[in-house]
Length: 109
Image (cartoon, rainbow, N blue to C red; front, side, top):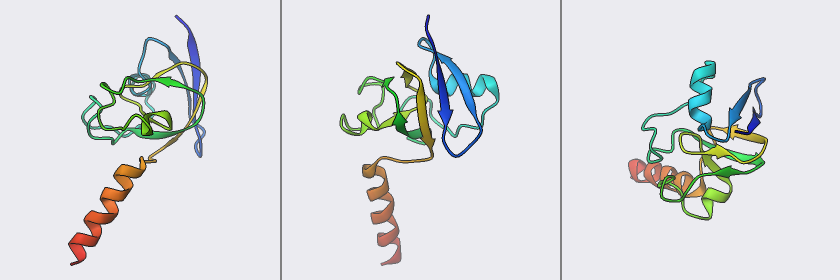
């Protein structure tokens, strides 16, 4: 079992996560306030932009992300570290940002 350091940019929070754990499960154990809801890769509440490092998250497991998005974003409920990481929490993939923008525009009509 290998352990990696996961640093959350913009905060003083860092957690050590084994390659056998999800980032979210370790955050919960350590009392780090990582947003989440479904814990199965669908709601995207736990998404974070990958600033540095690599994660393992199968596209099937990370259902809410496209293959391209899965290269730049981690769903912390599914992602397991493959290296030390820097993550920016609360950053959502473009497909979600576009939906949010179009939903807001529709509500204004």
